[in-house]
Amino acid sequence: MNDFTVLTLPDSVIDQIPAPGSGRDPDRFQIMIRFAPGLVESADASIDGFGGRYEKTVTPPGLLNGAASDGVIKVFSFPTSAPKDVLLDALSNRPGVEAVEIDHVVSSDLASSDLLYQVGITWGLYGPSGDGIGSYSNYFGSAADVAWANAQASADGHIGSMKTVIGVIDTGIDPTHPDLYLNIWVNQNEIPTGLASDQDGDGIITFRDLNVKSGGSYVNAVSDINSNGYIDADDILSDSAWADGIDDDSNGYTDDLFGWDFYNNDNRPFESFEDNPNKIIDREPSDSYHGTHVAGT
Image (spheres, rainbow, N blue to C red):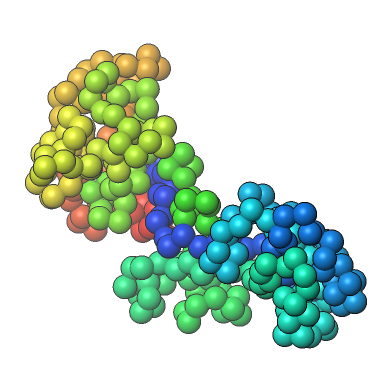
């Protein structure tokens, strides 16, 4: 019997890196020029002499070479054949030019921090050989390494969104797994009033919010009932304050906080084969938690 389990994609935190430039001509490079106020035309001769082309004005001017200015920063592109050092010197020596700098394209190089991934054990995450990504390959893998390598960081240095939902159709999933428990989808309309608040301000209640502590205690009304050191779906479904017997979203399924098990007709969509609510954290092979593997890759 296949169960349908829903996960959310996490906001994986990375170092804040400028996103790669888009729409640039691969046969040209760009230079930023900061002009003194009222002297924007002073470098025209050098720009024209090297085949320069105006691209954009940077607003607000901000910083260039570490110094603040009220001047205007304009970006020009030049053919890759133009001698960069000679061009930079020529532009720097023009009257009214305060600073000149190559507008470098910097890209994000994202990869998992999981040590098992780094040493080639989590084979399901790798893509086929020849993709040019990483040291390991798997023709049947999910190619997560390719997705990470091509991901773009947002302005706040994050990728992904907890609002992105993925359905896993397979034979059970372990919602207490250390790699998955934070990403189990939560039915927002089934949360009893007053039990949880959005701690990270992303607009939804997730297990990241439910695991926030202050002074050693959980901020939200949750308890680590299974004593594994964190709040997971097993804790919530075992808590009568959350699983209160009320169909809060009025969809006909009571306490469907994480979905519904239509085979057993209950609110524990994680188990497979065994109709036993106490088996949720059991990892016996007979329970076939293959969905855990699928969700992880």
